Amino acid sequence: MTSTSAIVTSAALIGHSLSDDKALATLPLAMQFIAVMVATAPASFLMKRIGRRDGFSVGLCIGLVGVALAVIAIRNSDFVLFCVASLLVGVFNGFGQYYRFAAADTAEDAFKSRAISLVMAGGVIASIGPLMANFSKDLLPDDVFAGVYIMIAILYVASLLTLRFINIPRPTAAERATGGRPLHVIMRQPVFVVAALGGMVGYMLMSLLMSATPLAMHSAGHAFFDIAQVIQWHVFAMFAPAFFTGHLIRRFGTTSIMGVGAVLIAVCAAINLIGVDLAYFWIGGMALGVGWCFLFVGATTLVTEAYSPAEKAKTQAANDFLVFGTVACAALLSGVLHEWIGWHVMNYIALPFLGAVLIALFTILHVRRRGAALAD
Image (cartoon, rainbow, N blue to C red; front, side, top):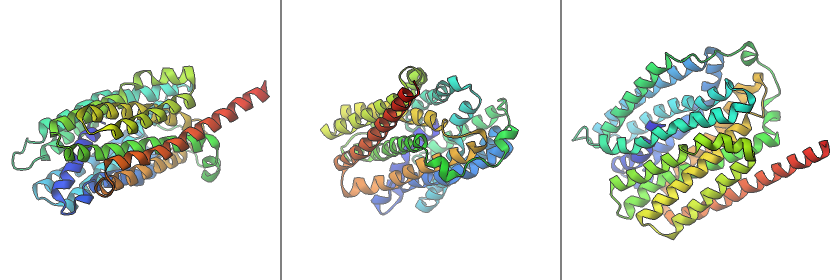
């Protein structure tokens, strides 16, 4: 999470400096999210066979190759190589997305939402990512931003070493077994549809708006330090609420908390439409962060209700494929949309998607209440 926040802070600016076509500034970031989408299914099925710990280690090794190539690309002003490097970093992120499911897998049903929240809350430390980017971007004076990827390599090595001391239970016989319902049957369940839609829209809009935020702030004349500060507080807002999101879900229900998240993202869009002063970017970014946390943690909790142990790997893979497929599209289009239609119109685009999520949440909540009433 720390490395991702550092990359979000700097990747669009690196792409902007390396590419002759400025509309392609967010292409490296999009390549990273495309790789997350492509890697989710292989990562899930690999972990089904070798376990979470070894699977995470494989992903980290691939990520280390990616950051090494990123440093070489920046030093040689090679935009294409930087895209390839971002792709490999994204492969590791595809593995890393399963940290939250690893927590849910080992928790009792009543504790699942809190377990997921606590793992996500670890991202509070990720708020140092933008500051790390600002501090390290000039480590190699002749190659601005190469130092960011050197620091990320250090983080990956630390993660790799830490994993060796963690005892994550290996998959049970039931989890390794094949079978269960066909995937298309699982994906047609209302609970899966709402969970996937919430995760897709929440993460897509977060990616769309935050990928463009450094470009919008740069265009408005804000310094890189201010950009890093805005991203830092946005990342803090993404993960700090996770300390109590699990408690809120248990008290008010998953769908209610997801609804609050969707409303907060709409508030972010409204704030962004008011102006381009630093305060608007700051407050809007924090509203977006909290909204994403509520919507994404809620969606992750909800999808765990959609599968049996034998169906876990394919259901989690399908969910994350859908989520990060939309995230990749958003990151790819972010720079293009900012160049073509501008920052304000991008925020208007967010509103219909949030409306669709709220309608879906209201529908499943109504169906569940009606089912409970009939049962009584």
